[in-house]
Image 1 (cartoon, each protein chain N blue to C red):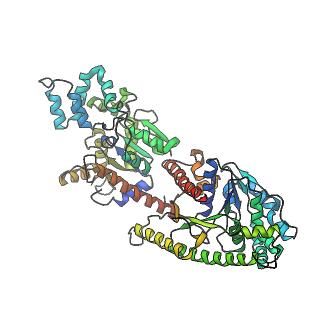
Image 2 (image 1 turned 135 degrees about the vertical axis):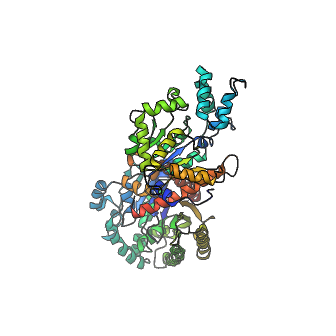
Image 3 (image 1 turned 120 degrees about the horizontal axis):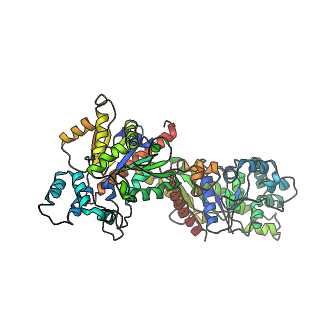
Length: 294
Length: 324
């Protein structure tokens, strides 16, 4: 359950499909492998496991330290270099091979039907679920697509893969180098992202707040207008974030933190929070049907 | 063959939507289904067919339900043929309605007043006669108007069963009291009249008439409670829905006896608010669960369409079970 009420402006924006969800590895985590126990790794856990492959010694210690310190992009870059040609196989081994089935959370996010969902995940768990629900009205766009910006103006449903997809590992973005290259080479996507942030309300679900690209965009916008004059974007988390940090997120990135009780290690509290959101949005859409004010 | 009327004297409770979708579901299950539109408002006909097709059937009384009455009203006896149309989208045969059917209201009321004559009796059995020629169907659905009038009395007299679609509100509480009083009254009148010594007991029509006792009640289908906030922003508690359901069951216990007391639970099923899918299905002339992208379904509404199929499936299965 959410610790507070869902903010009314957010509910209204979702109801009118003027909101975009950003889903991270915390959402994928709600899927379950065919063996009934494997779950997709979260970012940090994935890197830690990947580092296990090499003996821990003077040559590799800095990788572990980088992971501990949260310098995940460098850790990833170094691991990728070490894995070399095995990297793709290893990625698919972790994100594709276990044949993940989407969970109730995926269902609910799709049923909220925001029209556009940004996925930071390499797996295709959410896309599979939402295609099942949206059928012919859904398209998946990669950040590198020449026409990626169509999600802004067309009326179809879109899943936008912000960091690429395991179907084409060459386009994956997750090392320091990938980020820098993509920003320059695929600037179309970044302007579309920027435009989306300006015109839509974003809700981050199951994401950390360390994604460098997203942060850049958020900061650029947060400081380009009078503080407090524009509705915030929302950051949903179960972590105990210090009030100082919450204030910084709000001030520097115009991100309002919403906390839920995770209830258990499976984060069932997130599911009930989104269920609650779903019923609020359904009410709000019924009201829109009556007053036609969408 | 079983004949079922979908009947409630309150309008706007989703009666026609329920009937047409249940009929389509039965048809998909491989049953031979006929829908008879006995409501002069013709909502069922409008749902099952496009306007240009209906225009020609409305204009010609031989093509619609009026044909059952034109001969009768002219004193020429029962029609020999039932005008049958086929709705491909729903997979059912249809006796189309007509706004002109309202003329039959007065006629049937007058004939009812002379039940003790051969003619009055015969006219009142007009739907019984029609059903005889529909013997090759597995099930016949009657859509009727929301009234306690002569046409509905005539339909219910000849049907095997009736189902009440209803909304969960205080008006529905009163509805069952009205229905039971009305049905008790005319059933007693019928019983008395067909046993009148003035009638020739050996006449086949009289023998038929004696076998008719009127439709049995097999339960109600509720339009599910929609969570709405009241003026203070409070969510109306789910309790009030359960309370009304319980009161409705209490009313049924109180007012319906014998064959009018349905099997338990009295509630056959619930139809949730289908929002925009109901009008979309009406304008596309298709069952709700057959809607596709080309009809305008987008996004999460695909999930609603699938859900609708399950919901109508459950209600249909339960109705079918109760026909046995």
